[in-house]
Image (tube, rainbow, N blue to C red; front, side, top):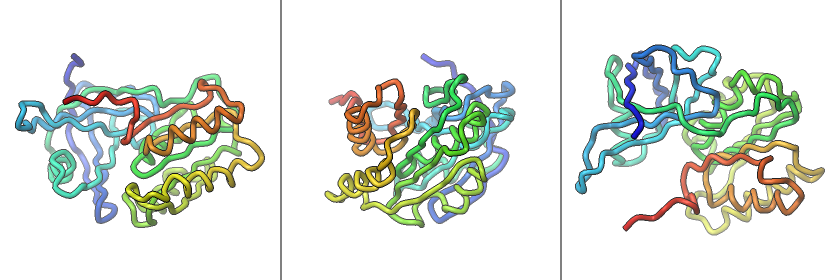
Length: 243
């Protein structure tokens, strides 16, 4: 079992109707994360079966200064985790574990990189792009965000500001998660982007129902599994189902 750590909320900023940016300061000192990693917040809220509500949040801020770190919290209806995070005030202390995850750049990689995020997967993408390791990437590198509307979660201007001039940023609208047209529309966008062939390194974050078909198609076009990293936020086909 991972040891619990603690962090205090030092800033809370509502940037859209459904998104709040929390800045946290770890009690034990710098978090020492690598851009693209995440933390797991323990809300201490018990569920009927005795399990505690825990939620994973990608670290949104740059790893150049890990004395503080940011996460983006999306309000999801009556969701226990998201509402707890939205309502917890400045000064409150949160229990968490981490940093976790391998959605990170290899230190020796300086080639053209393509980052594709769907939905809330944009948070992992922004953490990755702002990492110190990403600074060695080719200026031809690119971020593509697939979302159901321009009002979804993080404002496009916020994302563009985080990316700055580091790489090219594009946003494309696709059908919502429950639409039968979603995969087909997303694949058509992918085909148009990769008309001249995919880059050597790809990072995919977000909806597993899209990312794994993307991976399979890219591998069929000659890429190896090692060239593609996936951070699945939901619809993970490999997640163990418990009953």
